[in-house]
Image 1: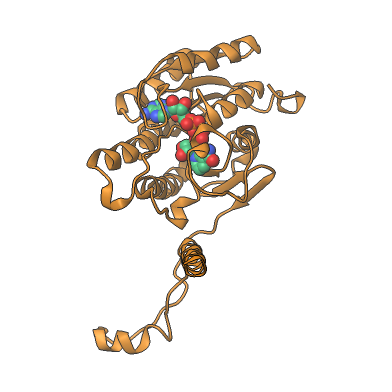
Image 2: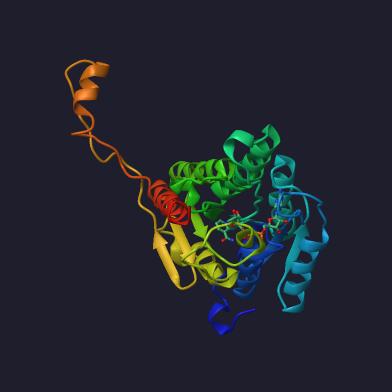
Length: 307
Ligand SMILES: NC(=O)c1ccc[n+]([C@@H]2O[C@H](COP(=O)([O-])OP(=O)(O)OC[C@H]3O[C@@H](n4cnc5c(N)ncnc54)[C@H](O)[C@@H]3O)[C@@H](O)[C@H]2O)c1
C-alpha cells in the first residue's frame, strides 16, 4: 500500500472493482483499500482472451488487502453475466450496508483484422467490456439513487476515439462504454450520482500484447490515485468526463461536437453536395489513418531503394 497521503481519503466508503485481480484493477483496489474503503474484488481470473477462469486471482488480492489491514471480499464470476453484477452489488449491500463506488476495469482482447473476425470474437469482447459495465452500473445505480450519492467509473482506451486497425471489436466496445457512461451521468445527475471514464495506459499483460510503440507509458499504480480521487467526496462536481491517465499525465477529453455545417433550403441533391461539401464542411483528419499512410509510404520507399 502507498503511504500516509491516502489514509482516510475514502473512509467509510464501499467500492466494488471489476478486474481487480490484476493490472490496473488490482492497483486501484490496493489504493482504495489504503484510503480506507471496503473493497469488493471482482475478477473472473481469466487469461488475456477470457479463457480458463480461476478464483485464485481475486482471492489473492483479498489476501493482500487483509494482510495490509484492509477489508475485502472476493467475487470470482464473469461480470458480463448480469446475475454476477447483481451479486456483486448485493454482496456489498448485505456485507457493508451500502455501495458508494463501482469501478469497471475488467476486460479482454481478441485481436483480429475485421475481414477475419469471427462472431465469437466480436460478441465476447463487446460482452465483457460493454455489458460487463452495464451489468454493474444498473444494480449499483438503483442503490445509489436511493442513497442520493455514488460514483460510477468505467474504463475505456484511446481507441474509443482514434479507432484501431486490428481491434475493431475492442474499439467499438470502448466507444460504447464512453457514451453509456456519459448517458449514466446525464440520467443520474439529479440523484447525486457521478459517472466518469478513465482511458489508461499502463504496463500490464494487456498492453504488452498490443503491437504498437506507445510514446506514453506508465504503471498501473499511476492510474489508481485518479480513481481514488473520483471516488471521493472531493470530486462530487465532476461527471460525464473522460480522463486519460498515464504515468504523471492526466488529460481530459473534449466532448465530441459538430465542427462545421452547410445548409440549403429544403434538401441537398448529390450533385450539389459534390459541388459544395469539400470546400465548406470538408473532412476531419483521422490521426491514426494519417500515421498509417506515413508508415506505408516509408515502407514503399524503403522497398523501392532496396529493390
Ligand atoms: N493496460 C493498458 O495500457 C490499457 C490501455 C487502454 C485500456 N485499458 C483498459 O484498462 C482495463 C484494465 O486493463 P489491464 O491492462 O489492467 O488488463 P489485465 O489483463 O491486466 O487485467 C484485466 C483483468 O480483468 C479480468 N477479467 C477479464 N474478463 C473478465 C470477466 N468477464 N469478468 C471478471 N473479470 C474479468 C481478468 O481476469 C484480469 O484480471 C481494461 O478495461 C483495458 O481494456 C488498458
